[in-house]
Length: 490
Image 1: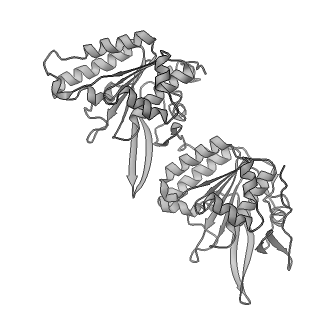
Image 2: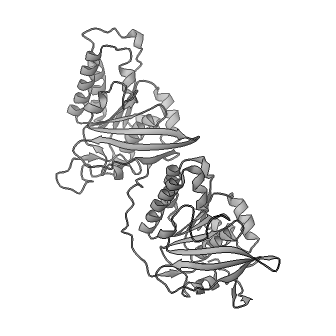
Image 3: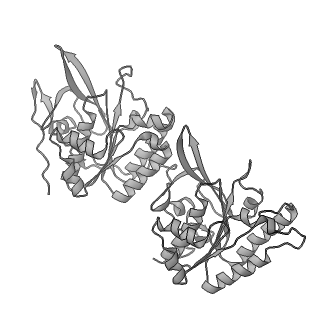
């Protein structure tokens, strides 16, 4: 795929930009890195700097047809090839095709003789030859600290740093230079960020044993850019940056109605079910049937030939399939048809932002029309109450902006009034179903009622319901209505 370089930004007279090909980064930077200028990518060890530089280089070759040069001071070509092969990149093949040059420069600090004549002239000759050989458009230097290791003369170091950045700019290549984070500063020398046209900071933090990766654009000369911290993932597909902190309330409102999967519940919702693209919240104490009602919605979605993403924080996929099969719901058949995806994870596996980033990735890759999260109350174990609530607001806005219907279950406790949730998201939910157990004549009786459902004349009745081995039955008067007809496989 060939990119139209420098034309991603629709604004006239804007700074020409070089698309990186890194998922989400070009959206955050509003088009990519400054074209023909150096960008500094800094962060502590293990933050993903080398991978960032390599992915920028390799996606440039593969997706934009731009040859690239990597000058590395720490890892050999064979080591990098082995590392990148796990991400699906074949460095050896690109080298054979004369699209990539990897130049490993061993710098031994004790061999550097620090004199007034010390300069980077040798590096420039070497780099210039590699650029000319390929006609390279992209260059990566990893890392700058190794290049200046052993130098204590700050005046020489600063002069050569300035010269390096100026030389790269004069060559007209789009360059990424990685640098280690310094003490109380973005970089070790405290100068690199001032001579760079663009500075991107990568952070890998661990709070209460939960790790989160974040990216921030510290500086971007001549261009506007996102200023928030953006979570990013590193997985088998490389780096994915999630521009999620700028959710807006400009999503469309759909008039179409879709079934909840329970005929009697549809009747309570003005006889037609949920609005497509709306958000649904089901709250109740443990064992009241929240997951079962959510699963009925999933089955109804798949029965229409649409995709559903079911996110479970408590049960593994096979456990969920087994348990719901006992009430007559066959989730397995929809998974086999690739209409249902069950994503099971523990909330403590990562921070809230990483969960949000992972959900974005799952949604973008699977393209569901319905997303179910069971239960959202578990997010509290991955952050504070307010952080979890804020994260959910952004998730709901993201889903609505794409017209995706969403259903969330929320576990409430005996001490919590049923008309509020721990996470405080009930006010932005479109339809709220409340489940409760009532003791009567020595038995527990499950009840359901619609607390609110925006845009429709919903029932105000409290209905009894039962979870049977052939689905959920709701009462009509004193009788229980038979479960809805099973959705037939297409």
